[in-house]
Length: 480
Image (cartoon, rainbow, N blue to C red; front, side, top):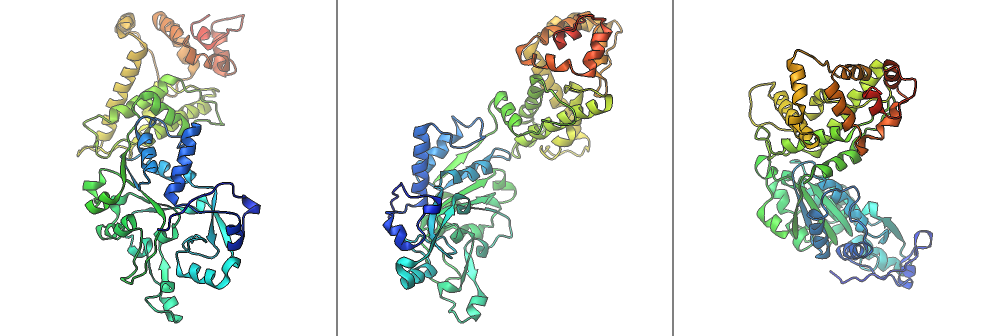
């Protein structure tokens, strides 16, 4: 490949050169796509800018591997279980490309005007010289993606002979008879193949030359295209044994294989869920306390170590996101049915996350149709226990156990109004005291003033016979 060097300071947008002569006069000198990505990454690192937006928990693990691969000008394979942001990161690599680059107008393979690649561009420049028209393509047109499926062919990726062009009188061996596939059309950009193991082995073999020699051959004809590409892939380790595998010579040609992972801490998982789950509802205000978010994330974390769940398949973060949305929806539904606004999700709402969990976990072999619900019930119970023990000392609740053993009951449920909960708390003094103390936590204070506007708050003040408006929700629950 011809060495290319970039010189910054080019005019932008409306002032960009429109012909080859103007481009040469501007002093523009092109650069390979991997050098371009490397240059822009160096600028980001020096400026302290993030490489990816919305990616949490990878700062000390995955991101250094990605940065090293780009600095090394490597092609990359992102290897990880489902729901680990592989595709999201791959699509954001386009932000390391320049705002726009010049191409020969009408070129199917994004020919560099200073180093034309295709016969079309070479003939056009030879014919028109400095008057050859050029156009500028943005970074969005320099990224192409293909989901690997068993029916993908070499023609889709590399190209095929266009028999219509042949019928027009062109020779089969002529480059002008070719219909280019996705890879040549991604020249001077990034090409991504998702779920690489699903690609048939013979198609993977067809990528050997693209990765190593950077050229393509169509139907055995000696058509050489010296492509300028950054090739990136994603794969699930499970695919190596269940659906397909990456052939060894292809893996050998990929510069860096980067392992991804699930959130390493509960806090990272909650941050991801908060950023992606739709919880801002307009029908009823839903105020979700932090400990409910912790229960959902702890459920996912326990699922990722449960022997009842196929760990080779993984437990996607999409489960936590969908569960958070269903939990909020059930609280919203309760608010509509009983006339409460705002509402707060409660433990009984978690009974309805089974629908959003199905399909996101894969159980080990079981003939019991209800086994999935039983496994989820056990995981939820363990998660609630773990979060409870984080906030409370269980042995302090011995008086409450004795209260129940004495024949007392406390009715709960997703359809119970909040004021009914508050009324029943007055019958259990020890529990009321613990609840009031817990609500004094700083992360729960924001729910106090907002609750004043709800009907349940007004019912609460009426119930306790207050002649003075309580300042906080916890004061109402405490009965003062």
